[in-house]
Amino acid sequence: MSSLLPGTLNYRDPHQCKTLIAELPLTNVPRVRDTLTRLLYGLRQASPRAADYIDVLEAMRAPLHFLQESLAARYSSRPVIPGSAEDAVLRQVVALWLGMAQGYAQAAESAGVHPLSESQLALICQRCVLYAGRAVVEYFRARRTIPRGIWLDLHGYFSTAEEWGFATQAVPDSLKEGGYPQSAAESYCCVLLIDLSNPYGRNPREFEWVCRWADQYASLTEIMPVFGGTDAKTYAVDLNRDNGAKPLEVFARTPHLRRLGSARLASEIERVVAGLKQGLSPDHLGLGADCHPVSAGRLLLQLYKPWCHAANPRRFQRRAGEGEIDIALGFEAMHFFISGTEFVQPPPARIYSHSDFVDIVTFGERAHDGAGLAVRQASARAHYPTQRWAMLDHSVMGYRLRAPPDTGSVEHSQLLAVFGPDSEHWRLARVSWLMVEHDAHLLAGLHVLPGTPRAIALRPLAEEGAAAERFSRAFLLPPVQIMGEEAMLVLPRGWFQPDRILEIYLNETLRRVRLVRLNTFGANYERVGFAELPNA
Image (tube, rainbow, N blue to C red; front, side):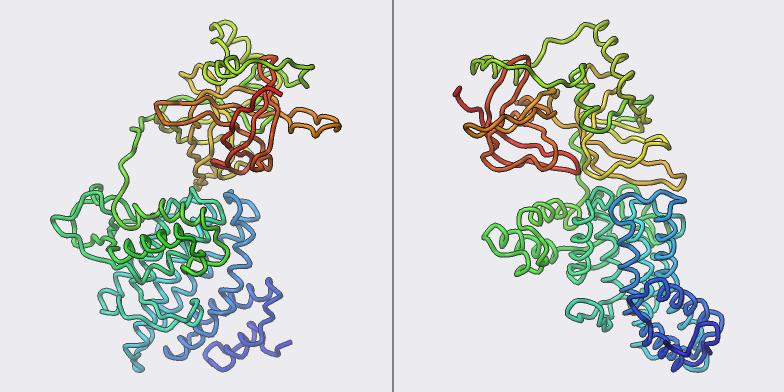
């Protein structure tokens, strides 16, 4: 154990500071956190010479990054609610990132009679932007709205780098994979790319990929001034405004506007996507060994438009919402509301004709009359209480909602059922993004799955001589020809296996189907294509 303790340390002595850092036991996370926090605070109160200050901060970087990864893992899997234990960890992580940025900035301000070299000033500019940007990214990771002033801190550090003439001067970074140098502008571009990736709509795995690719591709982007002929849909930032990238059309034209230039990035993404289609591995193409080719290719195509061109116009216009909608969580509740009855194991069932099956898939049950629907809704609420979420806005294919304080755990890509004020039927919807506001209210974007769902029962086809399994809850989505959607099954997570044969029970009839492909999946469901099988 080191004889140097933060309480007795001479912070003006760089040798003592670096000795303490070198002897940190990285496996002892609480001790590393407390030591680095006290060290950053102590250096601010009694800072050494500017050049020594930089050296100490550089020595802190490796253990700090290791610590921050360990801490962030505690809250990266779900939205962080203010006041929770994870919220305290998030605040610690953000404070350390901002403390590093402030430390480098203080080193520049305290140079005094010992002026720093241009290379040292360029390093300070890059590190300030890097660490202020890390604070922004941490809020994305935690699915929290960005607090006031965080974007302005980042913009301010980048403005200083521009003013000093060091924005594009790359500096060494031994912590980057491959040790490639990076400039302040590239660090700034990295944050903007993450901001444009729909970070609140990414699951934890996708978010890590986005962060890695944004850092890797930042060298293929540049920060450029806005000219008179710039496309109004181009993404831009105003260095004097406390927000991230938005379409240029929302900004007043000022000298503080900057846009992202990414012509070289577009060529690189096109090359990588082409390589994936040719069967090259994601690792070979620089995406990472943990990337699945299909998932990586799909995500890259989603990122191509915002990263390389401009804002996407909405396919369906959004309208301001009023009132509340009913939400049912969990397969049991969803199945109950969509069917209107308690789920029971089906009795021995008859095999029905192909034409009957087509009619049921396409048309479903005949609509209930208004009185019957009201009775069904009242009965359902007595058995499975729903939640009422406030509608902020909506379109044909989705909603933006605010959940009540007692909502409980909701995950990205979770399937739930919705019943809006003007709805005739319950619909299935997927949580497409999540964000927690400062007052702890959960905001969610829901994408409504095409088609009015039918509640069904299904089971795997028993092998010859074996006992049949019990039926489970699932849903059938009819084809929607106008949208090019074929009929789909919605199954609990883990059910899909290629060519698996299932028995479906609906309207007192039984039919066999073969699972063909996994279309989409989420936290609690799989949406799969199927083929009907002839009668046995």
